[in-house]
Length: 117
Image 1 (cartoon, one colour):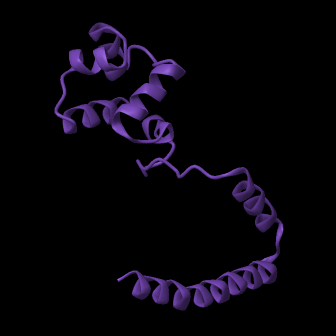
Image 2 (cartoon, rainbow, N blue to C red):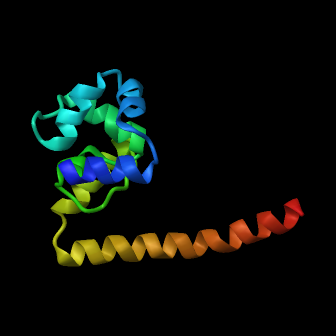
């Protein structure tokens, strides 16, 4: 995490003082986070993730993907939960149904786009 904090800050071309001001802490405290002398609390991690537009998991080194995962609705969460319960064949069927639905939607979208022009 230490190296990521420093790399992100340098990439953003911001100094420790300006960053500390942005996340409502002192420069000294932020410097301790960056140098590994102190662990940032949850609230600061969230502020840093928001500031840099990265995920907290990325800051913590749990992933190498800095992108923030997309937010999903409760309905999407329940669908994913049910999808994971399917066996291999069930997942293949679910994908086939979605592909068929997408193919059916494409001509409708194309004709709507032509009408709008």
